[in-house]
Image 1 (spheres, rainbow, N blue to C red):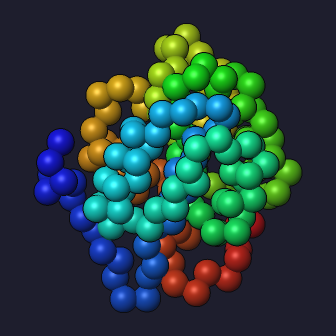
Image 2 (cartoon, rainbow, N blue to C red; image 1 turned 60 degrees about the vertical axis):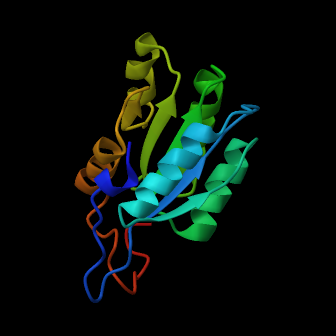
Length: 156
């Protein structure tokens, strides 16, 4: 996909960019897809933090807290989503971060998607999902206060 195909949306005066954390939980060693999504969401006008490889659930949630993100994207190819994703969503709840939009992508069997959604993963993007679809989903589903300047911390 050409980078020019990704629609950009710069924030208006008095707004900040939607902040997205892209994370690679577990022992996955392949991060090309995560890097492509990171770049695509940046090109779409979002501020994106990429954690790098081999992140634990604690590391991911701590980074989300530190960076005050609106969205967390989890990229996984290893099949460990059934173990790692519940830990992440539970840690988010324990930290009062239920309002953070969480999505997943990678190689996840279709039969696992309903369980992931039930635990708080809003959507699972599979191979072939476009960057436009991902950016559109984020904009349409992020909490209403995302992107507002001088966030008062309300909602957390």
